[in-house]
Image (cartoon, rainbow, N blue to C red; front, top):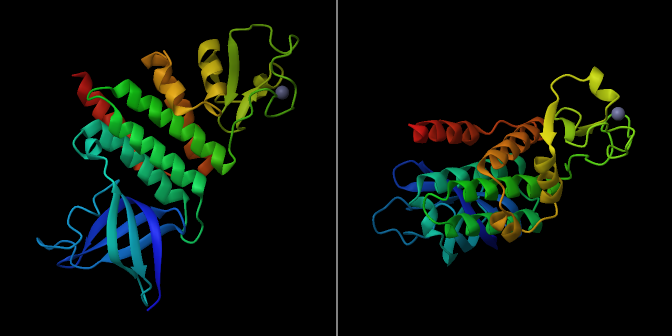
Length: 264
Ligand SMILES: [Zn+2]
């Protein structure tokens, strides 16, 4: 049986029969990997603690007739702070679900792997109850993920006619701009009359949104973006993401339910 090595992030695991588990990984070398960890549910399993969600591991995998089999797993880094915090876990679940639904087997992306690693590392580091910081990390993740996948929205020219959005004659008010999820960016003063479902993005949010795609994670975390603006950006990016990547992310709905419960 052929074997291969993979530096991976554990994204999902579920039980297979009495004692085995199927583990889904994002690897640096091979993209998504789905493999069986034999005996992983047993009390004295040799995998004990190594295949927990969001662990960074080095593993050796044997190619099987149907499913590949994990023969060895060594821990590189463990993010213990994630699984012990409900909100951190949920944000990490969104990241995991997005990755599993958009990345494929045999199509590795070093940039996506690094982005996941950085996002999970920062989520793990957050203080308890730092929900606004966690949402900023998610905003950062969504923007960078879109950039890597080639879906950066158009901000400086109109997404319909190509006219310069910031030219004086097209923007009578300097308070922000109109944005279309469907057309993938800003819409000029002329075109906005014929487009439905436009979102108004005020000047503050617009500046943050434009800078997000090239910002560093530490700049986003330390920025003084208000919770209201963070929620607004999260909402825009979530809808943009779902529309253009054409996927459903159930963990987003779950995040909203938790937030409602926390309000009471
Ligand atoms: Zn236009």
